[in-house]
Length: 409
Image (cartoon, rainbow, N blue to C red; front, side, top):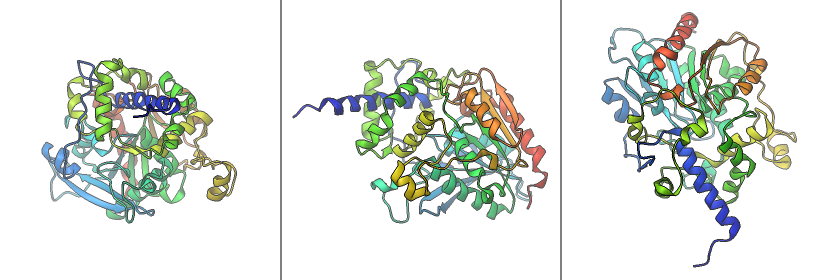
């Protein structure tokens, strides 16, 4: 067998190393420092696998985007539901990168935002973007087709999130509350610059809000940007980033089993997280991470390099074809209605949603959001902290209740 050429070997190593870091970015390692990832159990649905077993009513919904992708939505009610009661105001939960709607239910019912909102009387809807295990399929494309993965957070915002909001609005006849985390905030901010979407939204709570990534402080990510790993991945013909495939699992377990120091990688990527439960790592890994596209990853790296909050940059020629201009259009945050209430929660230890970039976002908004600053929180704490109810959720619920009086249209 011929040895791999040096450039390919370097690229392969960097990709392998990068994948190990991404897995760490989402979840802490167990006490041995080894992840022991495994293929996901073939669950029938999110409702059946995670929500019904906790005693909560849950129904599955399937919708289709304008560009042909099938999305799964779940609708969750209180475990103490009075069947005679009218549903409360609808809330859409929008997950982050390499996650899906299960992220909101990974802790106990007393600690997980999805369950807490249901118990507080909200009509909880759970979003899952294209490509995740709960939103698979297309009207004409197979997941094996490279075209199936030809999207970034731009399409997730303008097609997926748009269709989710429209579906919920049409079913409930009420304006929708949004909760977004990480990439879910990128999607929300981009979508809310569109008047037809914003008019269906009552208020939004953005956890680890991101629109600019110019001052991202994690040195590992900065190094990956500097070596243009995202472009290398695309040049090698990799379109789907699926760390739960057979090769991905074997690679991760091999890398973390003595070949690479996998200690404290979570802190190195996301910042120091104060409040997750290490004993639940194996349970988290039953569900996470979910696939995303290499193009999506490339778009995020473009944001870091250019310091912009813009549509995907195809290069001069294709930009002219796609956008009618040399550079991709920016998402203008000043277009988000001043009347739209926003809550933004950010952490002092978050190395991905940097405070300097957050301040840049605030300056471009017309409104003055309600701010929640949690000094000890890192990026992952906002989704799996065991103390989030007291630290964050109670304030979030109070914020929604204060703006919910006009939710019926």
